[in-house]
Image 1 (cartoon, rainbow, N blue to C red):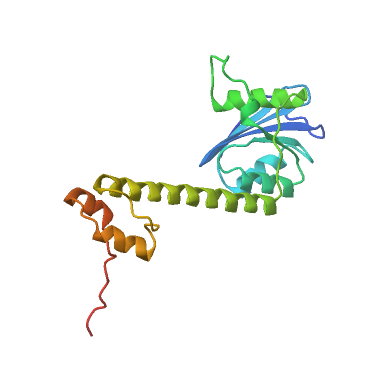
Image 2: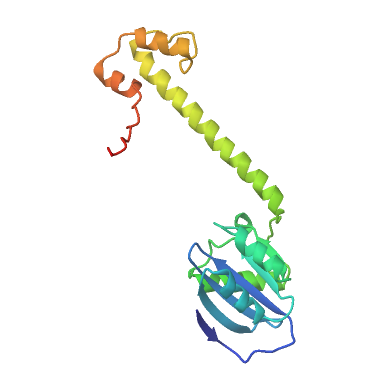
Length: 203
């Protein structure tokens, strides 16, 4: 953990904390109510280290996390610590006019937006709702794969003639597909690979 203190810390006064969350490491910036930076800390993502840095901001600090990759665990931890939590919506942030872009600048600018009440926020869903969302997203990806596989099957069969009327993945459709004449290139794509059987060693 690497901490750089900018000004003497003012205890007992509310502080604002900005977390630039990444996959493995994060940058945490703390400011007081006047916008003076108190400390800048870089940590490896770990719940205990994050809780340690947040506790230095005093009781019930205003904390924001950007809704980027893997923010669930950080939000749940900050809720448990009793923080005044805000989830920044990336779609509402306008960073195109900046000449300098780094982690510290991102966290600092978002803290200033939070202080003046102009931070674009996203809704923080409950853990149960997030689980339902993940199930819906996973099913959506499965449907996309299914449609893609069907399209590939029809793409293999189309050059050989009219596509059989039975649904190709069904048993009757497979029989009709095997009865059709295809060249070697299409036959390689059509024939499924059998999984290798692992033989148990002889006693």
